[in-house]
Amino acid sequence: MTNHPKLAALAVMVNNGQVLLVKRRNEPDAGLWGFPGGHVDFGETTMDAAARELREETGVIGHPVRYLTNVDVIHHSPDGTVRFHFLLAAVLCEYRSGEPVAQDDVSEAQWWAVNDVLSGMMACSQHVDSVIKLASSFRD
Image (cartoon, rainbow, N blue to C red; front, side, top):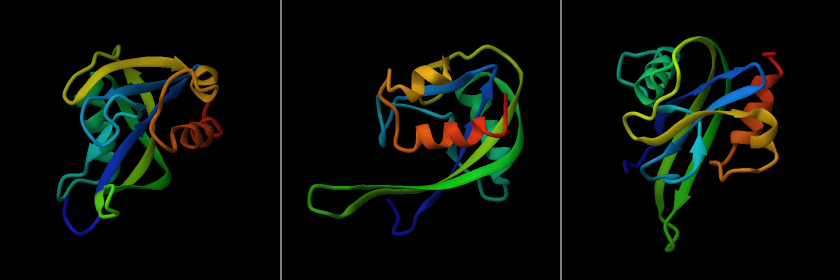
């Protein structure tokens, strides 16, 4: 990891009471459910990165609508040194087409009922619940 945070985009898609989540294959958060997302390429807007990562990881096409929030994710080693530091820009995306199929660096991709996620039915990455609540205030 470099000595500065890495910028990544999250594609947050809430549609008809469901949210699209993926199970991460790699660290950080391997095995946890979270939003499709990943790095922002140099010269790429964060909004475009969210739509690209959504398509690459799930095959679902979405249109980025608005920024929701930013989330710092910092993981430390047992000795206290920083292993990972990401600044995640959560982008609300509008569903356009496609059915989720796990691709790229995710092991599963599927729609989940918002209420099931918020009740803790699956192990999720930090901040998933608060971002879903924020996204739901703009959708449905």
